Length: 137
Image 1 (cartoon, helix red, strand yellow):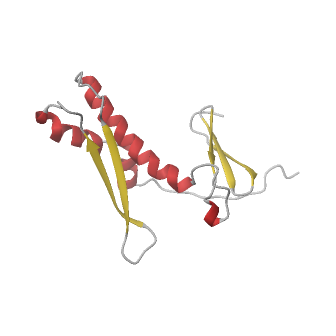
Image 2: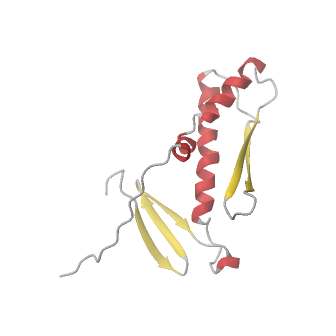
Image 3: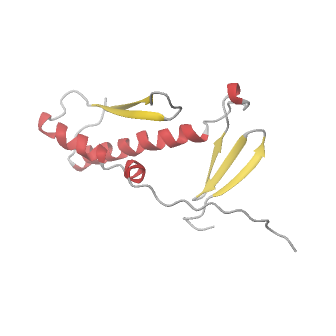
């Protein structure tokens, strides 16, 4: 399996394991939706990827400038779109540590905007979904 291949396995119940780049990422559905609640749901991982990606860019910004990161945090919140089950707004709040240079506040905000996950949402790839029987003789 190469770095661009992701394999999905079904270990039982509503659990789904995702194998990629030498890691196995477990998912499950919440108990209220018929799952066991043993791992984040796939959509939860999607949201976590946005928050952690923004965090990576903020952390990199600080490290490149030798700005201490003790006390740095990010809180991401979501709001449902009116009349829909989909998210209508995502807010990423960057909590800067005491002593953070005020002159860098606009720049650290721009750094978070560079998140590659966000960029893919803003300009989504083309999806191609195919099905076929494997191993047929």
